[in-house]
Length: 149
Image (cartoon, rainbow, N blue to C red; front, side):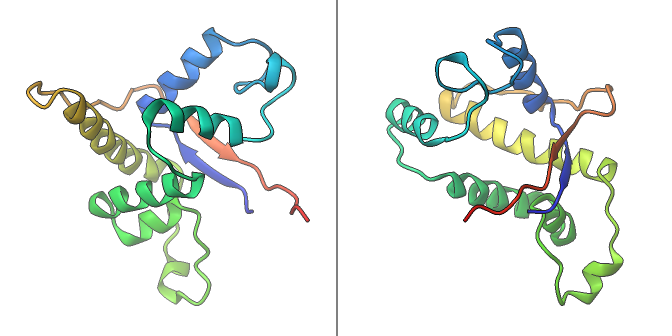
């Protein structure tokens, strides 16, 4: 995996702030019994599946994000958000999209997801779009990991 830096939407920022307030140790996502950090997501997926009664795998979340995002942003931005390799896509090699340029598209996608969630909870209630915070520099960074064998 290559290093991948993304801007945080307000919804993600709020989740991380709640996690910080309820933290058990120095990690955002503590491991089993509050020791160390989470290593295996199998139990977390099982808990969500049990509560939601929807069977899924982690890659389904990525596919769902991509499906929603493709309706909201350009192909180049979508590729950058998904960290897809440009390979033989010569045009994509000329598109240099900074993390800051992804801030508004990421918030737009988040607003679409959140409005879908709220609509499914209460179809009669109208929800205002989520506004991007003025606080700059909120980013998610995924560091390159060694390959597992």
